[in-house]
Length: 406
Image 1: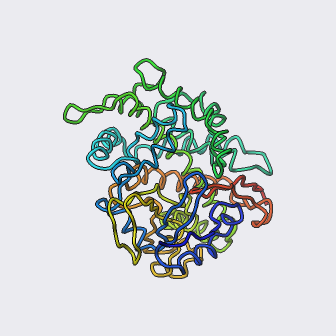
Image 2: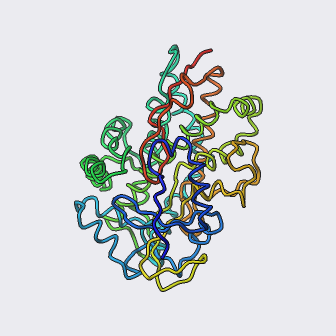
Image 3: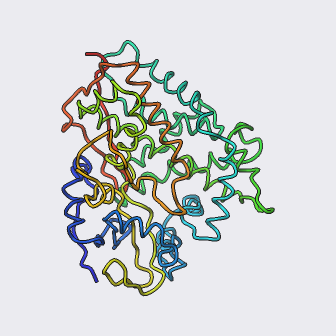
């Protein structure tokens, strides 16, 4: 058995400069063992090849722990209110055929919407948010733009009223720090409030607009199968959380990377045609999603040069894979012209991120609109003074103070 190592992957100091730690982890080999708060002992795939192989191997690694003879998920859920526990019913925690059924239903609802058709709506929201900043000298983009844009976009997609956005921000504010059991407990009341709201909204006449994704998910049907109310609420919460939280940190982390690398900032200002590769590099370099959901070993297994027992927990450490020198030249360098860029920020395999095109579009539009509106924008303080959250699995800034004028 691999000895558990004491790698710091939670602290603000790690998130401010993760590369030295990630390099040390890969130096141990493709797999390292680490003990996390709440979760416990976990094996991490830290090379690009090992991480990709893990995410594609559904025979040896299950998402549902019961399919690997483990009660790990059940033990964790036992200590949580039922309202929280039902969130585990979303497709991310399922294996086929259940995952295929849930993914098919949500794909059916998503298929009616194209990203190109949504671009004007996203641009309008971005411009409306930026209008509020006009005439001001210094602002915190995290609280006044980066968080509000994805929140407003996903609410509009789901068909939730604009006036409820501030309620969501208050309810979910406790999720900014989930690195300890105390922080998780403090976040529970806000999550319960969101779930109760979404349950009401999921019902016909519950307040969601008839042309939104909630209504389409409620009506989705394949071969006579539909989503149960619990499955619908869990799916909406997944879309809401994934569509808001991770994109927030992609936009804020990407802006921070650009503003702290003047040469790259000047390139994107001169050549808007670099935006697609710029967004991909922000996904790689920032790696807002640091770690995948855990998989569970389904049988005694020799894999990546290590022995595993049935029920062992393994996760892909995307942040380490995304700076693996075996796949990326000069991996510590932020290079918006990088191509190809085979990052794993959206995962791979059957659990590939459903909203990958939406995230790319939101980031590109956010960068385009804010640099067009404020061409002289720069950091209001030294880059090393800006703080990061203490988080497991998510890399996020606490704030992004900028000066909008020279």
